[in-house]
Image 1 (cartoon, rainbow, N blue to C red):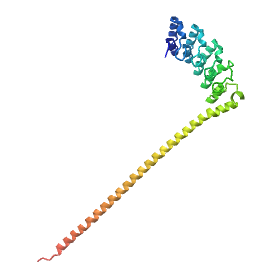
Image 2 (cartoon, one colour):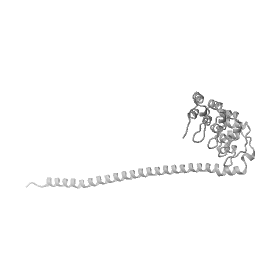
Image 3 (cartoon, rainbow, N blue to C red):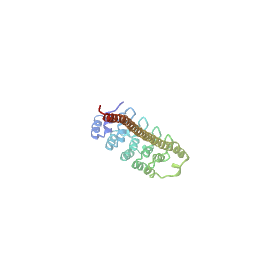
Length: 254
């Protein structure tokens, strides 16, 4: 894994240090990591506008740099919701608006999917193609619809062929709806399982209480029976003793 000092510092937003490094070694601005990302990609992803401006001042060709997945710096800025960075990059190269990743995502696709209202507004102001589809046949507005980003959807000049085409209905019912139903079913199963556990616990406690109560009654009954038996056995002895005393008293003197 290769990371240049400029890349790491650009990622963390240390503009002054980036300036010193570029002054010492201007070519360090174009060093790539293992995914072919430059310092400009990382500065754009984190919204470090000053570093973006400085890197482009030293090396204007960086604006066209693409990573191994064909993402430009604009893709990075749009996906993270950095509208000022996106505007800055587009001012250097308006053609970035139409650049696509390996999955055919434009910057508008990524901004719409992430629900980044301000970025989407800036991109739409430059009149991009709304008919561009990604690798799954989804337009940017469909990405916003499928993620439930209503504020983003409201920014689009909607027409029926953009959202309500037969293919979009198919995509919705084959991807969005099943995942939603799956989450709902999982929630129901979890609730059912928790209810079963609660019921089992309640029955266990109830049976335990009943067993304890029965044991107590049995103990009390046995104790009472034992006490009664002992009392019954003791009474004849006392009676015999009384009779003996009475016999002794009525014996005449010789």
